[in-house]
Structures are given as structure tokens and as C-alpha cells.
Length: 94
Image (cartoon, rainbow, N blue to C red; front, side, top):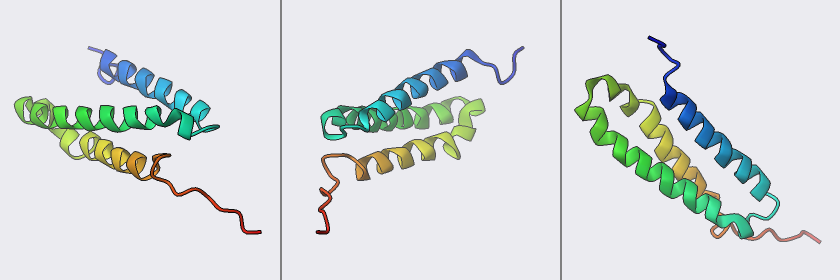
């Protein structure tokens, strides 16, 4: 009866808001907060992998195959590339 106001949307938005706040706070010292990147990679990868079979089991969830699931995998790739333990240290040009 509530259309797009399903409780699931609020739950997901709250989780991603909390993670974003922690990522912003952790940006002051990325090496010390590398676990936030690890969590982001693992949580989004597992979330995307779980959504794939569910999209085939539940016909009303198929749209996730074209939007949410690819986005989750792209987000994992971005976090992997920008992971503090993978990024080369910046050298000063003096």
C-alpha cells in the first residue's frame, strides 16, 4: 500500500548512511581505517552475490540485475582500487 516507501529502502539507506559517515571520518587516516574498506568490499560483494539468485527466484526482483547488482560490483571495484593498503604512497616533489 505504500509503494516506494517499503521499509527495506529505509533500512538500506540507513546502513549506507552509517557506512558513509564512518568513511568520511576515517578519511583523516585511511591506513588506520582500512577495515572500513574491507567491510565495504566484503559486504557489497556478498550482497550482490546473494541478490543474483534471488532476482531469478522472485520475478518482481529482476530489475536488480540491471541496476543494483552491477552498481554493487562497481562499488567493490572502486573500493578495491582505492584501498589504503593498495594505493602507492605519495611522494613530495621537492
